[in-house]
Image 1 (cartoon, one colour):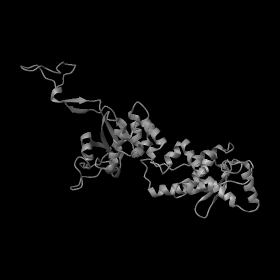
Image 2 (cartoon, one colour):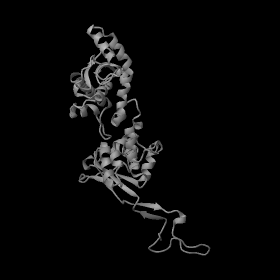
Image 3 (tube, rainbow, N blue to C red):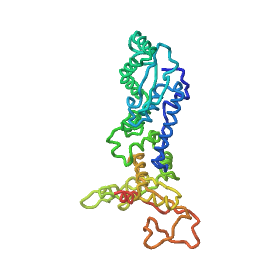
Image 4 (cartoon, helix red, strand yellow):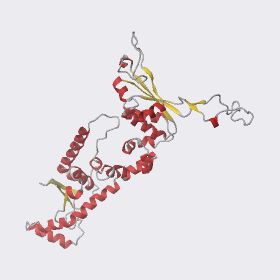
Length: 372
């Protein structure tokens, strides 16, 4: 391959960047598609104008992305220049054809030419036919070499994992690059990913966060801030009352039965419930506008997806409660028939509110009931 290709050109072309849309961003699909198409067309114009600045893999990938079928053999017709002159670069020229394909002239492979696999007399014969202005033999050799060149170009993706992930002919979650990221997140197997409440591809975006151990409230808060595109704080050790099963409750010895869990300061507990401070966190979201607040109610998809992220991150190590905060000037007055008791209803204050409200709390039971 060409060692003289500028590093900047090789890097920018070989990766062929694709616009990334984060889960919290609000973009229309048609705008994203238009952006991808504009970028691909711009790169294609550059590779046609300055083909020698691009590596073989990069040039073929750019041409392939602008073709409808995305198959190399359908998008590219490979050509070999006559003669035995040493090529100056991997790609000598890229030209558009009338049928929507592109001719890519390369001299490092093929049946004839400088890097040809056939004996030199065949190259001399092709060169002689060209001098007679008869391209038939050269075209025939190119037809024979087309399949091998296309397979060589396809093989380039094997050593570029990012290209495997971007190949639309593959299921992205099956690509080698995606499999490696899934392994980092702890959800490598299909069985594990089936338990997720979010799309596996959304999990890939946060693979760096999921790969970091131990799990921390700071990383979870950062993840949710990006997912929801709003302020999020995590309150640890918020605590929850747990109901004890009868066989786990304290009991003094009595006729016909032994006592259990009755050592003061060790395992004794009064009543049927105990305060568990270790297994619940409180996710405080906001302050929010009232519109954003409504979009994060438990029966809305936005909050359910966010809770799916939390479940995937915590892996059932703790349960979560959610506190939604509303900006003081966004709190609506209570109106009959419009407010939802305990969710969107507040008593009016004649003097107006000075502080944001933090009294809308949904525990795990309410969240589970809304998702059912």
